[in-house]
Length: 215
Image 1 (cartoon, one colour):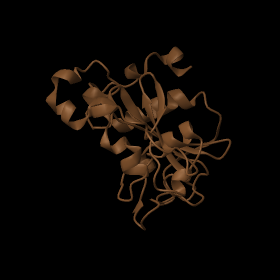
Image 2 (cartoon, helix red, strand yellow):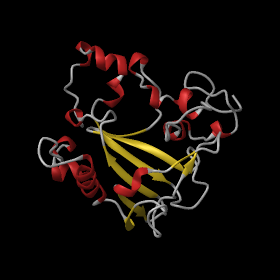
Image 3 (cartoon, one colour):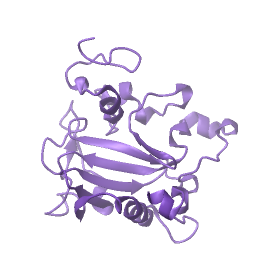
């Protein structure tokens, strides 16, 4: 509905003009969330704001280390079912010239092949989701998930890789199942596609192998 009203997503921001990723985040979020039933709008995390939608910090499942989400500077909404959603514009590698673009010749670019930028082709940003707002457990893969916005739709983070084009930070095996991972949100695709959170209970799951602990 947003693209019907405003046109293709890659036309919503002007990075050759006055826009930055922060101003673009507001534009994209306003266009999309106009069509979403919201309970309230809120900026930030509990670290910065008392009445925030996101917690002050989130942990992974294997260590006591934590991550303070950068949602304090991005548009954030609480949906009527209690789910908190923040949006951040970005193409994944920090190059505004590639924001939302698919007309880049990756086959003739050794740099793109080396860094596996295929995962970011057409990438416009990410939705950060906490299914119960600032309430606990505030842990990646339990109540915290990430979805990527592309110029042709939305996809869950952590999808199965596609050969050499699989970006390291989106690998389920190396991140969601890996005890040294630092990339949050990579369990999202597993929950959506396999309809379980068995990665919380066994450590031998993979996209090409077991999809649940009882297999």
